Image (cartoon, rainbow, N blue to C red; front, side, top):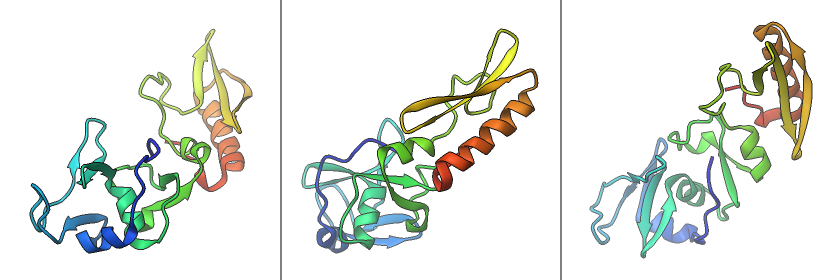
Length: 163
C-alpha cells in the first residue's frame, strides 16, 4: 500500500537491469553505486526502493513492470505486508480499494479495525465509497468485531482486510 508513483516505468528497461526471483529484484548490471546482485534499500517508510537514472522507484512497482507491460496508478499488497513483493501478492487496485486493505491504525485502542469505544460501548463502523457506515453500538467487543468484519467482507469483497 502506498503513494502513487510519479515516475513512468519502462518495462523493457526494468527487465534489462534486473533479475527477479521470489519477490526480490537484483541488479544484473553494474550501474552507478549498484553492483551486480545488489538488492533494494529501504526508505524512511520501509518501502524497498531502487534508483534508476536519478529517479526513485518502489520495488513492487518495478516487479509489476518486470512481469507486465503497464503499471497501474496503485498496486495493492494482497496480504497487507508491503515488504512481500512476490508478484502473486500484488494486484492492481484503485486508491479506495488499496485503503480497504490497510491494517488497523496504530492508535486504535480496541485492537479491532472499525471499532472504537465511546460512552462505555463499542461502536462499529466501516467506510464504503467515501461514506462512513455506522453499524451499531455494542456492549461486547466480540459482538462488535463480528458485525464489523461481516460488513467489511460483504462491502469490500476481495479487498476486505480485518487486520
